[in-house]
Image (cartoon, rainbow, N blue to C red; front, side, top):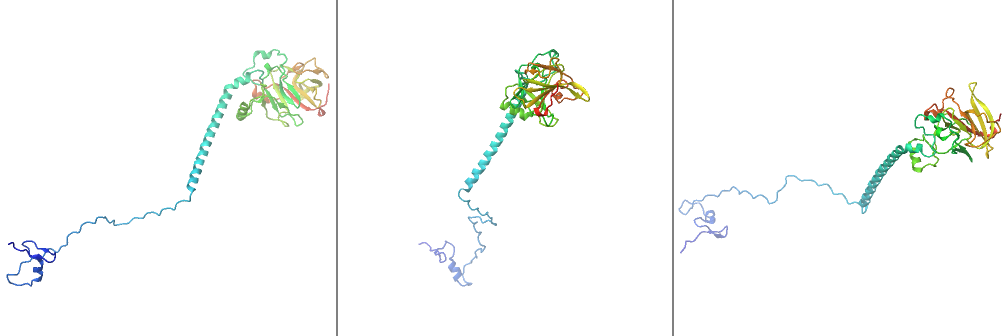
Length: 332
């Protein structure tokens, strides 16, 4: 028969073999007898606790409060406005680049075709260097070519096209009638030349300069430059009503010839800076570009010509102006 083991009343299970039940130790009174068993108190040091399954952080964090959602459609409209602003900026940059490219192209065209524009057809007033030798010889009458108008009056070139050095307009008096220039202004500036290239010209081939100085209408005086001694012809059809010397500082320098244009009795054209042709008389009928009036004289010693800036000489020229007929006195 097997020996019975003590029963563990605390654990409600049979005790281990060779170990007394805790009940016998706690319930028995201490005695000196043989029934007392030697007991060793168990270690009361608590067993180490198992680490927690979740780590506990020693500190805590703060999360910013979430913003309330924007009103419906606001974000879409803001994005659309930003996209539109970006498109406008790109369009402006593109327009600026196109404008710069166009200006550069026009400048190149002006540079490349400047020589062509100054020598084509009947082009005049384009000095290209020293006067050729044939300018010192008789040139003959000019080909009919209108260089200015005055209402219905057409003023033709009074000098042969091969002898013209430059054409200019300037103010010459408050009582003068203004001419309407024909052709293009050669000193209009880069913007004016660009506009002229874009819009085109009238096909006349005439280039003129706007000169400074004087008073009255800026186109009241018309100067047609040519070398001294060049033949000068009538610029209009009409009748000579006056031939008088031009006096400067008490000395005569050529003559002033006044012509009443046919069909325009309310105006009188005056030409100066020329020596009269011997065959010319008051009351004589003249024909534009055909009747010789005289030859160009040199006035560089008594006056400085504004046309000199645009010619290869001292700017000698025949001067033409128009006045109301009532303000002109005739003389023989």
